[in-house]
Image 1 (spheres, rainbow, N blue to C red):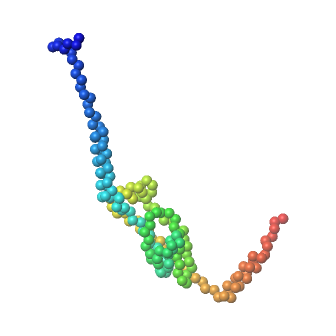
Image 2 (image 1 turned 90 degrees about the vertical axis):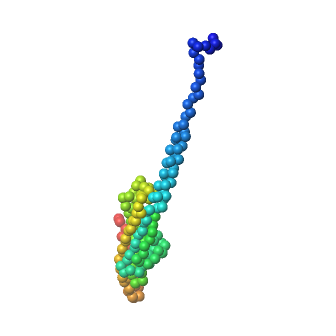
Image 3 (image 1 turned 120 degrees about the vertical axis):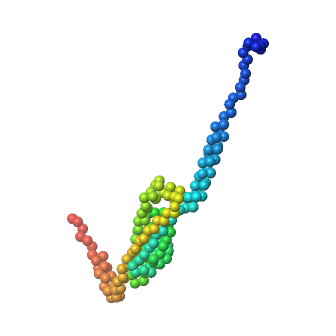
Length: 166
């Protein structure tokens, strides 16, 4: 039965079709990566988010410490990266020192997960400007005699023992 003739069926082997889905997948991946790079160059990778707080005092000219570090005299502008509670101290001769735990609240577009998009992919520059004003009270100067009187009064109060409950 190995004769091949005009009326016999012959088996023809057809090579399997080449699977080009890998090559197409690579092309799509390459295109997506290039679009990602282009979007970073055109938008967010240039860091379009700018955060700045301005600290003022009444009267102006107070030394400002932010988290214990000197940043300048009021009015002073400070760039910052993160929101949260900040320790702000103002010092001026003749006035009482003011220390405040100031909450620096984030705007709606800086809440998770929106902050990732607004920080990295915003097509426009976003400026978040915060303004804080503190009022300084005049320092009350007391004479040495008044200071000694207050000290004696506090000393005598501390030596009195409170009554013990029965």
